[in-house]
Length: 149
Image (cartoon, rainbow, N blue to C red):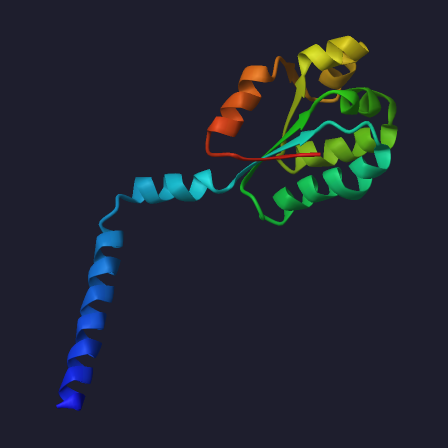
């Protein structure tokens, strides 16, 4: 009797597992792709005016996250004191070029860049300088993963 119950429980479990898998497969491929793509978007907001933090953490992680496929889509936002630092530091500028070549989207806060008088310099470096309040809000409310440094 015990063996019949065990067999019944086993087959019931297998049936339930297979039913769940079939239901998951019925989900539209487009929906699955959207879910996967949503979890693959990273937005890095860099605000620090500290060059060591930029070189030893922010740039290194952002660049490698894209290069090694940790995230499919990476956006790098330059905001506040980081815009001034970037405009002055040629090592960071060279690293930024590598990030752009890797396919990282480069954006900067126009209001901040204007406050520091560096908007033109950032544009020359290939950064999309624009007002970022709404864009950042959309990133936060959207499906992107947003981290700040």
